[in-house]
Image (cartoon, rainbow, N blue to C red; front, side, top):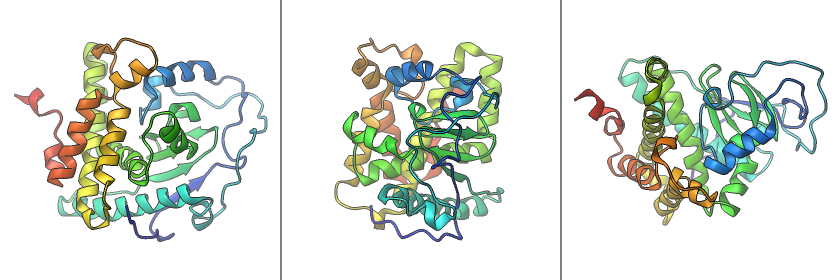
Length: 290
């Protein structure tokens, strides 16, 4: 995908790499083993961490992060740490330019999310950020959190490499930001609390809608797409389906335990966004209103 270079003045970026994040071994944090188990079961892709590990408060003495790469002190520096950092900032810039006018035309207040780079561990408004959680969106601080080493894991462990697959990651998380801005995220959270038996089903619908929004963004920037990009994205959607990940982890797929949707569901909704380019086609909750 041939995205334009980001404008440092048009994106919000913060960098916790190089010692700015939450130190490993901090007292009071959720054990890494718990998150790794979740990683093996689902290879969590954008899940709200408050649902997975709860909100973790800062506590105890700090120690030094181990092996964290140097980050940047300005947006330009942070986005230029390496190729994937620049790709991520380019995608963020494109997403802002695509979604802001859509909100304006609907007369809905728009606010850009903040891209938060971290390495190994970091802080978020939803508690601890851990690499094993994968990329995620935190509604409390409207931040998209990414340890860019996840892209290597996508390629080498999941077989979902490529620049468009990486852009899909950020576009999916941006989809959760859209849900937050329009108030849907709060409505679904309330519904989940009122009826816990439907919590997983509602969460899956949220994730599938974020997939569809990612497709809509790509469709609205189809002049930037290259040969093979759509196939790359659909392959990534397949490889991160709950059923595929459970099988890879040696588990029998159980739909009741899905959090993001099956491979077929994720491909279907990403494809719908890609083919329609219409955000109104992304109503994954439509059948609930009948």
